Length: 81
Image (cartoon, rainbow, N blue to C red; front, side):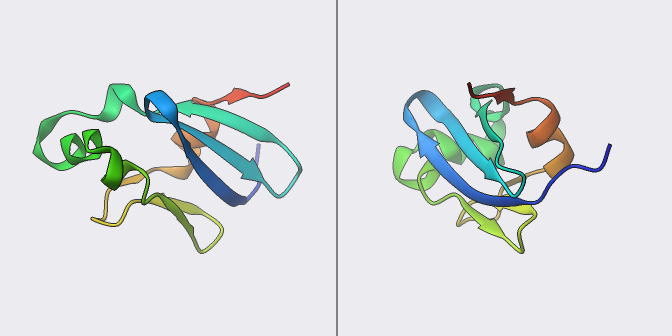
């Protein structure tokens, strides 16, 4: 299945991301399992976590360059009802 492009990402409490896709889907993704080690561990700092943005309608990225692979973000997120 070809996944839709992501249009917006919103950082939520408890290291969750709400993502909005071009097909109208809204999904929730838990970033906590990824926040470890020196590189992704920096996302524990809430001010850095909140810098998340969408780049090129495809990539979810933080200000220091951390990112989540688009397929993983889509497939491991839960559809919001």
